[in-house]
Image 1 (cartoon, rainbow, N blue to C red):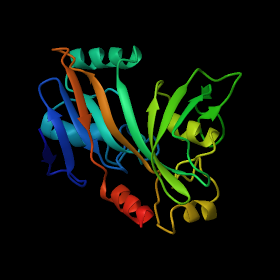
Image 2 (image 1 turned 30 degrees about the vertical axis):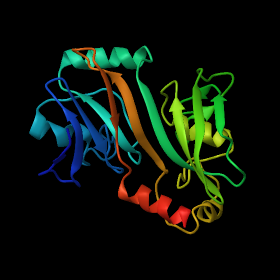
Image 3 (image 1 turned 180 degrees about the vertical axis):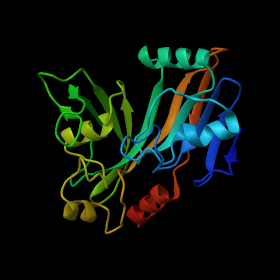
Length: 236
């Protein structure tokens, strides 16, 4: 089921699934999942969804500048069930990212490095063997470009900025990621001069079980226009 949520102060949101227990939609980049403490007036997912759907519950988060598939619970029962699925690592997420890859990106890459969330003054997640918690991300190559690559990322754990921190740790930071990437000049070379102003990260697919029926569910969110335009430019 696909529809477009209209009548909200933001570009239309593509609803991938809707029933009495949950919503699944394709979050646009730039939309916050939770309120910004410094700018509480900015639009958030709950503020936009509660008018047409009533009260909603946040189950998991995507960074403001990350696009892609997001699950929202519509009642307390679903909220608890979905939280339990995430806690028990029963939810499988596949992200697609464009990384800076001056050399050939390997066909598969596993980054098993402990992470410390909010690990410095810039609030970055950092690899920290002493204070970090176990974290694992698997990467696999989709397409190699001249100085970058389109890759899949499968985070086994779910820490803030995990993919961004692990990609940087492996030497393949996300293109457009000013917080975790190489200096700007190198970033522009890797994008072929294309002006991509956010981390090139998209939550592509999510797999979980319906909170009430236990039926297996799989949802895929199409790339947003800026991500598609970037890939077109890199292929050319």
